Length: 474
Image (tube, rainbow, N blue to C red):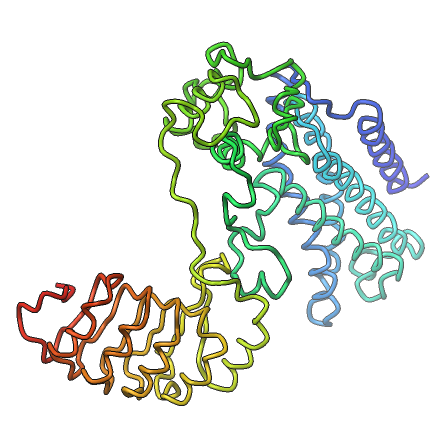
Protein backbone atom coordinates (compact mmCIF):
# COMPACT_ATOMS: atom_id res chain seq x y z
CA UNK A 1 0.00 0.00 0.00
CA UNK A 2 1.41 3.38 -1.02
CA UNK A 3 2.01 6.23 1.41
CA UNK A 4 -0.86 8.19 -0.18
CA UNK A 5 -3.20 5.24 0.23
CA UNK A 6 -2.25 4.90 3.91
CA UNK A 7 -2.83 8.60 4.51
CA UNK A 8 -6.18 8.42 2.72
CA UNK A 9 -7.19 5.52 4.96
CA UNK A 10 -6.20 7.44 8.11
CA UNK A 11 -8.17 10.46 6.87
CA UNK A 12 -11.21 8.27 6.19
CA UNK A 13 -11.04 6.83 9.72
CA UNK A 14 -10.88 10.37 11.15
CA UNK A 15 -13.96 11.33 9.13
CA UNK A 16 -15.78 8.22 10.38
CA UNK A 17 -14.98 9.46 13.88
CA UNK A 18 -16.64 12.77 13.05
CA UNK A 19 -19.70 10.99 11.73
CA UNK A 20 -19.84 8.90 14.91
CA UNK A 21 -19.75 12.02 17.08
CA UNK A 22 -22.49 13.66 15.02
CA UNK A 23 -24.72 10.57 15.24
CA UNK A 24 -24.10 9.32 18.76
CA UNK A 25 -22.90 12.38 20.70
CA UNK A 26 -24.59 15.37 19.08
CA UNK A 27 -24.72 18.73 20.86
CA UNK A 28 -27.60 18.52 23.31
CA UNK A 29 -27.78 21.93 24.95
CA UNK A 30 -25.77 20.90 28.02
CA UNK A 31 -22.65 22.76 29.12
CA UNK A 32 -19.58 20.79 30.06
CA UNK A 33 -16.02 21.18 31.36
CA UNK A 34 -14.13 24.42 30.97
CA UNK A 35 -11.23 22.57 29.34
CA UNK A 36 -13.55 21.35 26.56
CA UNK A 37 -14.93 24.87 26.18
CA UNK A 38 -11.39 26.28 26.05
CA UNK A 39 -10.41 23.95 23.22
CA UNK A 40 -13.71 24.45 21.39
CA UNK A 41 -13.25 28.20 21.42
CA UNK A 42 -10.40 27.75 18.91
CA UNK A 43 -12.89 26.63 16.24
CA UNK A 44 -13.86 30.15 15.03
CA UNK A 45 -10.14 30.91 14.68
CA UNK A 46 -9.14 27.65 12.97
CA UNK A 47 -12.10 27.44 10.60
CA UNK A 48 -10.83 30.19 8.32
CA UNK A 49 -7.68 28.26 7.36
CA UNK A 50 -9.33 25.35 5.47
CA UNK A 51 -11.79 27.78 3.88
CA UNK A 52 -8.97 29.91 2.49
CA UNK A 53 -6.88 26.93 1.35
CA UNK A 54 -9.75 25.09 -0.35
CA UNK A 55 -10.76 28.23 -2.23
CA UNK A 56 -7.13 28.76 -3.25
CA UNK A 57 -6.77 25.30 -4.82
CA UNK A 58 -9.01 25.91 -7.88
CA UNK A 59 -7.30 29.27 -8.40
CA UNK A 60 -3.91 27.52 -8.57
CA UNK A 61 -5.27 24.79 -10.83
CA UNK A 62 -6.76 27.28 -13.29
CA UNK A 63 -3.74 29.61 -13.26
CA UNK A 64 -1.44 26.61 -13.70
CA UNK A 65 -2.95 25.84 -17.09
CA UNK A 66 -0.86 28.65 -18.54
CA UNK A 67 2.47 27.33 -19.95
CA UNK A 68 4.38 29.98 -18.04
CA UNK A 69 2.77 29.11 -14.71
CA UNK A 70 2.79 25.31 -14.67
CA UNK A 71 4.60 25.34 -11.32
CA UNK A 72 1.37 26.55 -9.73
CA UNK A 73 -0.23 23.16 -10.49
CA UNK A 74 2.47 21.56 -8.36
CA UNK A 75 1.71 24.04 -5.56
CA UNK A 76 -1.99 23.15 -5.76
CA UNK A 77 -1.24 19.59 -4.70
CA UNK A 78 0.62 20.73 -1.60
CA UNK A 79 -2.00 23.33 -0.68
CA UNK A 80 -4.75 20.72 -1.09
CA UNK A 81 -2.94 18.34 1.25
CA UNK A 82 -2.66 20.98 3.97
CA UNK A 83 -6.32 21.92 3.39
CA UNK A 84 -7.38 18.31 3.97
CA UNK A 85 -5.59 18.21 7.33
CA UNK A 86 -7.25 21.45 8.39
CA UNK A 87 -10.66 20.43 7.03
CA UNK A 88 -10.61 17.24 9.12
CA UNK A 89 -9.29 18.83 12.30
CA UNK A 90 -11.55 21.88 12.34
CA UNK A 91 -14.88 19.96 12.63
CA UNK A 92 -13.56 18.23 15.75
CA UNK A 93 -13.04 21.65 17.33
CA UNK A 94 -16.49 22.69 16.10
CA UNK A 95 -18.13 19.65 17.66
CA UNK A 96 -16.27 20.30 20.91
CA UNK A 97 -17.46 23.91 20.91
CA UNK A 98 -21.13 23.05 20.36
CA UNK A 99 -21.07 19.98 22.64
CA UNK A 100 -19.37 21.70 25.58
CA UNK A 101 -20.95 25.15 25.46
CA UNK A 102 -24.57 24.06 25.28
CA UNK A 103 -25.48 24.78 21.64
CA UNK A 104 -28.10 22.91 19.66
CA UNK A 105 -30.59 23.59 16.89
CA UNK A 106 -31.11 23.19 13.17
CA UNK A 107 -28.32 25.54 12.08
CA UNK A 108 -25.86 23.90 14.49
CA UNK A 109 -26.65 20.46 13.07
CA UNK A 110 -26.48 21.63 9.45
CA UNK A 111 -23.20 23.44 10.05
CA UNK A 112 -21.70 20.33 11.62
CA UNK A 113 -22.75 18.02 8.79
CA UNK A 114 -21.58 20.65 6.32
CA UNK A 115 -18.13 20.53 7.90
CA UNK A 116 -18.07 16.74 7.64
CA UNK A 117 -19.09 16.99 3.97
CA UNK A 118 -16.28 19.48 3.29
CA UNK A 119 -13.71 17.21 4.97
CA UNK A 120 -14.94 14.17 3.02
CA UNK A 121 -14.97 15.96 -0.33
CA UNK A 122 -11.51 17.46 0.28
CA UNK A 123 -10.05 14.06 1.14
CA UNK A 124 -11.54 12.51 -2.01
CA UNK A 125 -10.15 15.40 -4.10
CA UNK A 126 -6.69 14.81 -2.67
CA UNK A 127 -6.94 11.08 -3.34
CA UNK A 128 -8.15 11.52 -6.91
CA UNK A 129 -5.58 14.14 -7.75
CA UNK A 130 -2.76 11.98 -6.39
CA UNK A 131 -3.90 9.10 -8.57
CA UNK A 132 -2.38 10.80 -11.61
CA UNK A 133 1.05 10.83 -10.01
CA UNK A 134 0.78 7.30 -8.68
CA UNK A 135 -0.49 5.87 -11.95
CA UNK A 136 2.27 7.31 -14.09
CA UNK A 137 5.07 7.43 -11.50
CA UNK A 138 5.59 11.04 -12.49
CA UNK A 139 7.12 13.87 -10.57
CA UNK A 140 4.74 16.64 -9.59
CA UNK A 141 6.38 18.98 -12.10
CA UNK A 142 5.60 16.49 -14.87
CA UNK A 143 2.03 16.05 -13.69
CA UNK A 144 1.51 19.78 -14.33
CA UNK A 145 1.69 19.06 -18.06
CA UNK A 146 -1.11 16.49 -18.00
CA UNK A 147 -4.87 17.18 -17.82
CA UNK A 148 -6.53 16.74 -14.46
CA UNK A 149 -9.02 13.87 -14.01
CA UNK A 150 -12.58 14.91 -14.80
CA UNK A 151 -13.81 13.37 -11.55
CA UNK A 152 -11.33 15.47 -9.60
CA UNK A 153 -12.39 18.69 -11.29
CA UNK A 154 -16.08 17.97 -10.66
CA UNK A 155 -15.49 17.01 -7.05
CA UNK A 156 -13.39 20.12 -6.49
CA UNK A 157 -16.35 22.22 -7.64
CA UNK A 158 -18.60 20.32 -5.22
CA UNK A 159 -16.08 20.96 -2.43
CA UNK A 160 -16.17 24.70 -3.07
CA UNK A 161 -19.98 24.69 -2.95
CA UNK A 162 -19.89 22.75 0.33
CA UNK A 163 -17.45 25.31 1.75
CA UNK A 164 -19.78 28.15 0.76
CA UNK A 165 -22.85 26.50 2.32
CA UNK A 166 -21.06 25.54 5.53
CA UNK A 167 -19.50 28.98 5.85
CA UNK A 168 -22.89 30.61 5.35
CA UNK A 169 -24.42 28.52 8.11
CA UNK A 170 -21.47 29.38 10.34
CA UNK A 171 -22.05 33.06 9.66
CA UNK A 172 -25.69 32.68 10.65
CA UNK A 173 -24.68 31.00 13.91
CA UNK A 174 -22.19 33.72 14.75
CA UNK A 175 -23.99 36.82 13.48
CA UNK A 176 -27.68 35.97 13.12
CA UNK A 177 -30.04 34.55 10.50
CA UNK A 178 -29.99 37.66 8.31
CA UNK A 179 -26.32 38.58 8.60
CA UNK A 180 -25.93 38.91 4.81
CA UNK A 181 -29.19 40.74 4.17
CA UNK A 182 -29.55 43.04 7.19
CA UNK A 183 -27.69 45.92 5.49
CA UNK A 184 -28.44 44.96 1.90
CA UNK A 185 -29.48 47.95 -0.25
CA UNK A 186 -33.27 48.22 -0.35
CA UNK A 187 -33.40 48.11 -4.13
CA UNK A 188 -31.39 44.87 -4.32
CA UNK A 189 -33.49 43.38 -1.54
CA UNK A 190 -36.69 44.26 -3.40
CA UNK A 191 -35.29 42.79 -6.64
CA UNK A 192 -34.50 39.54 -4.83
CA UNK A 193 -37.99 39.49 -3.30
CA UNK A 194 -36.67 39.69 0.28
CA UNK A 195 -38.66 41.36 3.07
CA UNK A 196 -37.43 44.68 4.46
CA UNK A 197 -35.15 44.59 7.51
CA UNK A 198 -37.25 47.10 9.39
CA UNK A 199 -40.41 45.89 11.06
CA UNK A 200 -43.39 48.17 10.83
CA UNK A 201 -44.09 47.51 14.46
CA UNK A 202 -47.14 47.29 16.63
CA UNK A 203 -49.83 46.35 14.18
CA UNK A 204 -48.09 43.06 13.42
CA UNK A 205 -47.33 42.27 17.06
CA UNK A 206 -50.63 42.80 18.78
CA UNK A 207 -51.21 45.04 21.78
CA UNK A 208 -50.02 43.01 24.78
CA UNK A 209 -47.22 44.19 27.04
CA UNK A 210 -45.19 41.10 26.25
CA UNK A 211 -45.51 41.51 22.47
CA UNK A 212 -44.88 45.25 22.43
CA UNK A 213 -42.30 45.74 25.21
CA UNK A 214 -40.67 42.41 26.14
CA UNK A 215 -40.37 40.42 22.91
CA UNK A 216 -38.49 43.27 21.13
CA UNK A 217 -35.84 43.09 23.90
CA UNK A 218 -35.33 39.39 23.19
CA UNK A 219 -35.22 40.00 19.45
CA UNK A 220 -32.54 42.64 19.78
CA UNK A 221 -30.33 40.99 22.39
CA UNK A 222 -31.08 37.28 22.77
CA UNK A 223 -32.17 35.50 19.60
CA UNK A 224 -28.64 35.13 18.26
CA UNK A 225 -28.17 32.33 20.83
CA UNK A 226 -31.76 31.43 21.76
CA UNK A 227 -33.81 31.03 18.58
CA UNK A 228 -35.35 28.15 16.65
CA UNK A 229 -32.16 27.42 14.74
CA UNK A 230 -29.68 27.88 17.59
CA UNK A 231 -30.71 27.53 21.20
CA UNK A 232 -27.95 27.53 23.76
CA UNK A 233 -28.73 25.56 26.89
CA UNK A 234 -31.99 24.39 25.30
CA UNK A 235 -33.50 27.85 25.86
CA UNK A 236 -35.52 29.57 23.16
CA UNK A 237 -36.80 33.12 23.50
CA UNK A 238 -38.54 33.50 20.14
CA UNK A 239 -42.01 33.01 21.65
CA UNK A 240 -43.71 33.18 25.04
CA UNK A 241 -44.39 29.43 25.07
CA UNK A 242 -40.69 28.64 24.72
CA UNK A 243 -39.78 31.27 27.31
CA UNK A 244 -42.20 29.72 29.79
CA UNK A 245 -40.82 26.23 29.05
CA UNK A 246 -37.31 27.29 30.05
CA UNK A 247 -34.08 25.50 29.17
CA UNK A 248 -32.15 22.37 30.08
CA UNK A 249 -31.75 23.60 33.65
CA UNK A 250 -35.44 24.37 34.13
CA UNK A 251 -37.63 27.52 34.11
CA UNK A 252 -35.91 30.86 33.68
CA UNK A 253 -38.73 33.08 34.96
CA UNK A 254 -40.80 32.92 38.16
CA UNK A 255 -44.03 34.84 37.84
CA UNK A 256 -44.19 37.55 40.49
CA UNK A 257 -40.52 37.16 41.48
CA UNK A 258 -38.03 38.91 39.24
CA UNK A 259 -35.16 38.60 41.73
CA UNK A 260 -35.69 34.83 41.84
CA UNK A 261 -35.87 34.50 38.06
CA UNK A 262 -32.74 33.13 36.41
CA UNK A 263 -33.32 35.18 33.27
CA UNK A 264 -33.47 38.47 35.16
CA UNK A 265 -30.49 37.49 37.31
CA UNK A 266 -28.36 36.85 34.24
CA UNK A 267 -29.21 40.05 32.40
CA UNK A 268 -28.49 42.01 35.62
CA UNK A 269 -24.97 40.61 36.12
CA UNK A 270 -21.85 42.58 35.33
CA UNK A 271 -20.93 42.00 31.64
CA UNK A 272 -17.60 40.53 32.75
CA UNK A 273 -19.31 37.72 34.67
CA UNK A 274 -19.21 34.39 32.82
CA UNK A 275 -22.92 33.85 33.55
CA UNK A 276 -23.98 37.25 32.22
CA UNK A 277 -26.44 37.49 29.34
CA UNK A 278 -26.21 38.43 26.56
CA UNK A 279 -23.00 36.40 26.27
CA UNK A 280 -20.20 36.27 23.72
CA UNK A 281 -19.27 39.94 24.13
CA UNK A 282 -22.67 41.26 23.02
CA UNK A 283 -23.82 44.63 24.45
CA UNK A 284 -25.71 44.29 27.74
CA UNK A 285 -29.30 45.38 28.21
CA UNK A 286 -29.78 49.04 28.98
CA UNK A 287 -31.27 50.00 32.33
CA UNK A 288 -34.70 50.71 30.82
CA UNK A 289 -34.93 47.22 29.28
CA UNK A 290 -33.93 45.57 32.55
CA UNK A 291 -36.57 47.63 34.34
CA UNK A 292 -39.24 46.52 31.85
CA UNK A 293 -38.33 42.87 32.44
CA UNK A 294 -38.36 43.33 36.19
CA UNK A 295 -41.76 45.06 36.24
CA UNK A 296 -43.30 42.56 33.83
CA UNK A 297 -42.11 39.51 35.79
CA UNK A 298 -43.16 41.04 39.13
CA UNK A 299 -46.58 41.78 37.61
CA UNK A 300 -47.08 38.09 36.85
CA UNK A 301 -45.17 37.59 33.57
CA UNK A 302 -48.44 37.26 31.70
CA UNK A 303 -48.45 36.95 27.87
CA UNK A 304 -51.86 38.62 27.59
CA UNK A 305 -51.73 41.60 29.95
CA UNK A 306 -52.38 44.85 28.06
CA UNK A 307 -49.76 47.33 26.95
CA UNK A 308 -50.74 49.82 29.68
CA UNK A 309 -51.43 47.30 32.46
CA UNK A 310 -47.93 47.11 34.03
CA UNK A 311 -47.62 49.87 36.61
CA UNK A 312 -44.48 51.97 36.61
CA UNK A 313 -43.30 50.91 33.15
CA UNK A 314 -41.36 53.57 31.22
CA UNK A 315 -43.38 55.19 28.47
CA UNK A 316 -43.54 53.18 25.29
CA UNK A 317 -41.77 54.64 22.27
CA UNK A 318 -43.99 56.26 19.70
CA UNK A 319 -45.24 53.65 17.22
CA UNK A 320 -43.62 53.74 13.82
CA UNK A 321 -45.68 55.65 11.27
CA UNK A 322 -45.03 54.85 7.61
CA UNK A 323 -43.95 57.85 5.56
CA UNK A 324 -45.42 56.46 2.33
CA UNK A 325 -47.12 53.34 1.01
CA UNK A 326 -44.86 50.43 0.06
CA UNK A 327 -43.24 51.38 -3.25
CA UNK A 328 -42.07 47.85 -4.15
CA UNK A 329 -45.17 46.91 -6.18
CA UNK A 330 -44.35 49.91 -8.41
CA UNK A 331 -40.65 49.01 -8.78
CA UNK A 332 -40.92 48.16 -12.53
CA UNK A 333 -42.56 51.55 -13.20
CA UNK A 334 -39.97 53.33 -11.05
CA UNK A 335 -37.13 51.69 -12.97
CA UNK A 336 -38.77 52.60 -16.27
CA UNK A 337 -39.17 56.26 -15.26
CA UNK A 338 -35.55 56.47 -14.15
CA UNK A 339 -34.38 55.16 -17.50
CA UNK A 340 -36.65 57.32 -19.64
CA UNK A 341 -36.23 60.58 -17.68
CA UNK A 342 -32.58 60.27 -16.70
CA UNK A 343 -33.41 60.77 -13.01
CA UNK A 344 -32.80 58.72 -9.89
CA UNK A 345 -35.40 57.56 -7.36
CA UNK A 346 -33.37 56.27 -4.41
CA UNK A 347 -34.82 54.46 -1.35
CA UNK A 348 -34.61 56.67 1.72
CA UNK A 349 -33.76 53.64 3.86
CA UNK A 350 -33.98 49.87 3.85
CA UNK A 351 -37.61 50.18 4.90
CA UNK A 352 -39.84 50.50 1.80
CA UNK A 353 -42.35 52.45 3.89
CA UNK A 354 -39.81 55.28 4.26
CA UNK A 355 -40.30 56.29 0.63
CA UNK A 356 -37.98 57.54 -2.11
CA UNK A 357 -35.62 60.46 -2.70
CA UNK A 358 -35.67 62.22 -6.07
CA UNK A 359 -32.04 62.98 -6.90
CA UNK A 360 -30.84 65.13 -9.80
CA UNK A 361 -27.39 66.37 -8.76
CA UNK A 362 -25.52 64.44 -11.48
CA UNK A 363 -27.92 65.48 -14.25
CA UNK A 364 -29.89 68.60 -13.17
CA UNK A 365 -30.74 69.59 -16.76
CA UNK A 366 -32.87 66.43 -17.15
CA UNK A 367 -35.34 67.50 -14.47
CA UNK A 368 -37.63 70.12 -15.98
CA UNK A 369 -41.34 70.83 -15.57
CA UNK A 370 -42.27 68.13 -18.08
CA UNK A 371 -40.19 65.50 -16.29
CA UNK A 372 -41.84 66.33 -12.95
CA UNK A 373 -45.29 65.87 -14.50
CA UNK A 374 -44.30 62.39 -15.70
CA UNK A 375 -43.46 61.43 -12.12
CA UNK A 376 -47.08 61.89 -11.05
CA UNK A 377 -47.83 58.10 -10.96
CA UNK A 378 -45.17 57.64 -8.25
CA UNK A 379 -45.47 61.06 -6.58
CA UNK A 380 -46.94 59.60 -3.38
CA UNK A 381 -43.72 57.65 -2.75
CA UNK A 382 -41.37 60.67 -2.92
CA UNK A 383 -40.52 62.19 0.47
CA UNK A 384 -37.44 64.21 -0.53
CA UNK A 385 -36.91 66.09 -3.82
CA UNK A 386 -33.40 67.43 -4.51
CA UNK A 387 -34.05 69.87 -7.36
CA UNK A 388 -31.16 72.30 -6.90
CA UNK A 389 -29.89 73.87 -10.16
CA UNK A 390 -32.63 72.22 -12.23
CA UNK A 391 -34.54 74.23 -14.92
CA UNK A 392 -37.90 73.93 -13.17
CA UNK A 393 -40.20 76.97 -13.04
CA UNK A 394 -43.33 78.00 -11.18
CA UNK A 395 -45.26 75.61 -13.43
CA UNK A 396 -43.26 72.75 -11.93
CA UNK A 397 -44.28 73.85 -8.43
CA UNK A 398 -47.91 73.15 -9.35
CA UNK A 399 -46.89 69.58 -10.13
CA UNK A 400 -44.98 69.30 -6.85
CA UNK A 401 -48.19 70.20 -5.02
CA UNK A 402 -49.36 66.66 -5.94
CA UNK A 403 -46.44 65.06 -4.02
CA UNK A 404 -48.62 64.51 -0.98
CA UNK A 405 -45.92 62.89 1.19
CA UNK A 406 -43.12 65.32 0.36
CA UNK A 407 -41.21 66.38 3.49
CA UNK A 408 -38.03 68.00 2.18
CA UNK A 409 -37.67 70.12 -0.96
CA UNK A 410 -34.50 71.76 -2.30
CA UNK A 411 -35.22 74.50 -4.85
CA UNK A 412 -31.94 76.39 -4.47
CA UNK A 413 -30.41 78.01 -7.57
CA UNK A 414 -33.60 77.62 -9.60
CA UNK A 415 -35.82 80.09 -11.49
CA UNK A 416 -38.85 79.77 -9.22
CA UNK A 417 -40.47 82.99 -7.97
CA UNK A 418 -42.67 84.10 -5.10
CA UNK A 419 -45.71 83.82 -7.35
CA UNK A 420 -45.31 80.05 -7.55
CA UNK A 421 -44.78 79.39 -3.85
CA UNK A 422 -48.49 79.42 -3.13
CA UNK A 423 -48.76 75.97 -4.69
CA UNK A 424 -46.44 74.55 -2.02
CA UNK A 425 -48.89 75.62 0.68
CA UNK A 426 -50.95 72.63 -0.43
CA UNK A 427 -48.27 70.16 0.72
CA UNK A 428 -49.57 68.82 4.07
CA UNK A 429 -46.29 67.29 5.30
CA UNK A 430 -43.61 69.65 4.01
CA UNK A 431 -41.05 70.27 6.78
CA UNK A 432 -37.91 71.65 5.09
CA UNK A 433 -37.66 74.04 2.14
CA UNK A 434 -34.44 75.39 0.64
CA UNK A 435 -34.88 78.59 -1.41
CA UNK A 436 -31.24 79.68 -1.43
CA UNK A 437 -30.13 81.81 -4.42
CA UNK A 438 -33.63 82.34 -5.83
CA UNK A 439 -35.59 85.58 -6.43
CA UNK A 440 -38.14 84.74 -3.76
CA UNK A 441 -39.09 87.64 -1.47
CA UNK A 442 -41.00 88.15 1.77
CA UNK A 443 -44.30 88.19 -0.10
CA UNK A 444 -43.69 84.67 -1.30
CA UNK A 445 -42.86 83.48 2.19
CA UNK A 446 -46.12 84.91 3.40
CA UNK A 447 -47.94 82.42 1.18
CA UNK A 448 -46.39 79.59 3.24
CA UNK A 449 -47.35 80.79 6.70
CA UNK A 450 -50.51 78.74 6.77
CA UNK A 451 -48.44 75.58 6.43
CA UNK A 452 -47.99 74.48 10.11
CA UNK A 453 -45.79 71.48 9.25
CA UNK A 454 -43.06 73.72 7.77
CA UNK A 455 -40.20 73.97 10.25
CA UNK A 456 -37.18 75.16 8.29
CA UNK A 457 -36.93 77.55 5.33
CA UNK A 458 -33.48 78.49 3.98
CA UNK A 459 -33.48 81.92 2.28
CA UNK A 460 -29.81 82.82 1.88
CA UNK A 461 -29.07 85.05 -1.14
CA UNK A 462 -32.76 85.84 -1.72
CA UNK A 463 -34.87 89.03 -1.61
CA UNK A 464 -36.44 88.15 1.72
CA UNK A 465 -36.51 91.09 4.12
CA UNK A 466 -34.20 90.58 7.13
CA UNK A 467 -36.18 89.75 10.26
CA UNK A 468 -38.93 87.89 8.40
CA UNK A 469 -40.57 85.66 11.07
CA UNK A 470 -40.28 82.46 9.00
CA UNK A 471 -37.20 80.52 10.15
CA UNK A 472 -34.40 81.32 7.70
CA UNK A 473 -32.21 78.40 8.75
CA UNK A 474 -29.61 80.62 10.30
